Amino acid sequence: MPTKTITDLGAIVIDENVIATIAGVSAMESYGIVGMASKSAADGLFELLKWDHLTKGIKVTTKDNKLIIDLHVILEYGVKISVVAENIIERVKFNVENLTGYGVDKINVHVQGIRVGK
Image 1 (cartoon, one colour):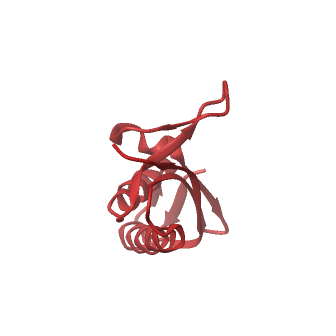
Image 2 (cartoon, one colour):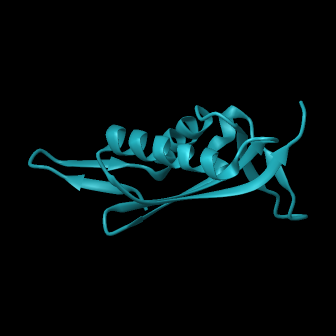
């Protein structure tokens, strides 16, 4: 469900794909993240998504005009997962709130895999 703001002059509607794109680009700016992950329905395996398909690894829901964002990520081997996840949460929250004007209630980071080497 898209987020909607009613003003004196009309309505502002921001689609959840726009918010997912902002969240995906923000997350990719964080150190230690390799990319977003998409779950393959066929066999339960996760695949690394290219830049054009970042939103497939992100789920945005709206509850009481607050956003809940789920990010499925793949991290680099050797990074401290908790620190990288906290950095992703802070960056995504800051960018989404500043660019959309909507409050973020929760950001859940689901680490789906670790990439070893290149």
